[in-house]
Length: 400
Length: 220
Image 1: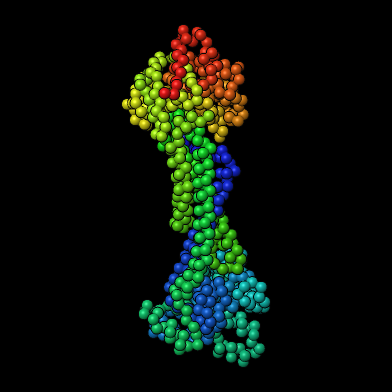
Image 2: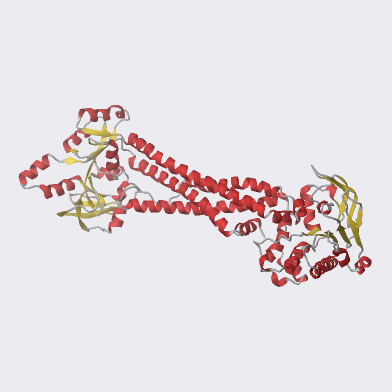
């Protein structure tokens, strides 16, 4: 019989105690796994979706709202800005590119975003099927949106007003699917993209009373925001101030706003982390108590092993292996539990098509979890192991 | 064989025990008798190499224990000493077969199922191999513990209070079993007991056949 087998049998000789310790340790590790996964995925999403966007310009209001609505598409925008003002920005010497974003409608909860081809190029997305739009009322679907909506090339649909499901539909204005993007892992995956003109057309068709009214509307066309890339990093010093003081628009620097957001989220994750730490500490103490009492209960058995010829190190290794079994099992269950929690959160958040968080993600940070599990187990086992190492056979002989 | 000369042992904060010299030939029986606290357990621990004597010489199974280091003593004990404790310490988590397997594990040898079955069969308890200790009667458990003690065919069998809390018939069975097992294996048998019945349970022919030495250890 190998030490590993013997330790397994000893561990499960008290099934209820072993199961409770395992549960406690697994819960702590699952919480830590969950936090690591969410933290990793949020950071990745921010990093990925913000890449190359130096500034977001939109209506005055909350700058964070502007970033969340315009870049991550998880909030409503503060309002619209005149198209002419945005077109003027494109001519500014510090600006390399301007990508217009027009929001307002959705199809079954997936946002319809009026924009230019540059938006797709910016995220280096490629077409899986079909082609990009070349006229208004043609759409390209993000991979997730296409899969969840069950739409294929050539299908048509009518958008609804508002950014969440449930708004009134825009009667006769039908969109036609001309292309479907390959999954890019970016925000594009869950968007329906079309020409900016489509968004204007739908709303003008819906609200214009007559041709004159339509003409006025065309003159006063708006977009929701613009994603701006600088020609030079020096622009970051003066360009936002120029927007905020010299125009009716608001400039929001994604890097600043996300740092602010992460620090706000950080308080929450710190609390969760502390909670997971307390759970782990409790689990460690519980494992310690279980092993300590195992040594006390099995003192005679352990002494007998010495009598049978086992050196103290082998007897101690037996107890240590028992603790390692517990740690290894807890690591597996903890990681599985954490992944399940992340998948559940992802599923819940996907209901409103917000952040991309899910299970079955394996960032390198997850390696901490088994290390932590084994560390806690070994730490909890250290004193009991010493007790097993020092078990006295003479005491066994003298105890009557 | 067991040979001791001027053997003594001092507890760190207790008495110093001095033991009479003995020469027990291989295959003989030594009855270690005396009241509780007279040093029987300490003598057993010395002979098993579990504690080192404060003074004196000790040779067990042709091995002078003073010359061995701790790890070597553990390895030597695994092969040379068979131990039957008063409380049998059959692990409740393991089956009878696995309990015997502990001898192989303790000595670092690969498990030999055939030897386990042979040891159980020699004591008539081979059918109990898959059972857990909780499913054994007192007598069955003692046979299993004895099978574990003699599994690796030790040169010396140490039995600590083997008749404690047994009635007369069971005590006679236990002593008879120890004598016959030791005899079959050609092992030296040491019975440490404060039970006066044990001396009477050792039949007279044992004295003539293999040599029987009652030794009374008294606190010095």
